[in-house]
Amino acid sequence: MAKPVNVSDASLLKLDRQAVRKRPFGIRKHILLYLMILPGFLYFVVFKYFPMGGLVIAFQDYQPYQGILGSPWVGFKHFVRLFTEPTFFMLLRNTLVLFALNIVVFFPLPIILALMLNEVRHRFFKNSIQTIVYIPHFMSWVIIVSISYVFLTVDGGVLNELLASMGLPKISFLTSPEWVRTVYIGQIIWKELGWSTIIYLAAITVVDTQLYEAADMDGASRLRKTWHVTLPAIRPVIITLLILQIGSTLDLGFEHMYLLLNSLNREVAEIFDTYIYTAGLKNGQLSYSTTVGLFKGVVGLVLVILSNRLAKKLGEDGVY
Image 1 (cartoon, rainbow, N blue to C red):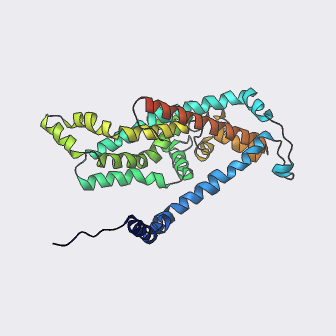
Image 2 (image 1 turned 180 degrees about the vertical axis):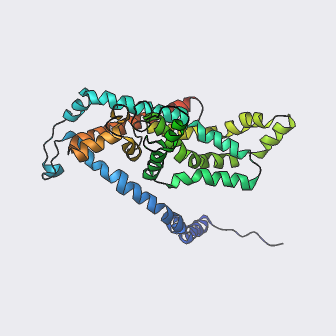
Image 3 (image 1 turned 30 degrees about the vertical axis):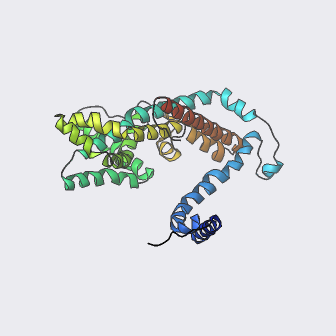
């Protein structure tokens, strides 16, 4: 029978140090993963964090030839102007109305579409539907609005010609203040509905199949399984995306609404994003437009923090 070998503590410590030296360093071990992260990291540093240094001009009377260091400081002068101008309440109303349409009308639709696609058993038909609804996402807003113009314009528009053939009056969809919001949300649904279902479909694929088997044993219908199994399983994903959507309350995007904006519907279509472009680039009021942008960012940050805390109080994980 072999005798046990006595190893001193010093020898064990020496072996541990040698093993640590031979172990590859974290970054070197996962260098390919870090290289994959690098483009996204550089994007946020260059285009998101680095430009934050320019926010100081919101507190200056910025002059390009004097630069940031040479421009005089004016404190909260531009903020006072923003909150006291009548334009502010028009911008706030229009932005909040369009955001409410996004939340109430658009946000539930990708969830419903994902649940419906999940119930499709014929793979070819399911893939065909997914491809058709994904395609508009890859078209720019210029193309989307241009196609809408062909259908909705009064002079030769497909829809208006159809109304005229039925003896009904033509409708000015693109210039009428009553219709611009409907056109706006309709274009968002057309362009982004299919693409937004991807995350929900991915969440549905990881639902435990044993839950469905248990529901089958209880005699649950497909609708019952969707309501009591699928929806609760993807609820954390829904809450997370809702919090992120709330964070963009005042950030609806510039390009889409700018293409729909004209002098006839400006009272209901002008939002903070288009106003920043007009005030900053067209009128040269760089400090004032930066103030509007800073106000948007602060409101978005506060809303994300509050909605995240509310989600945690309700028992959800939240964003962070």
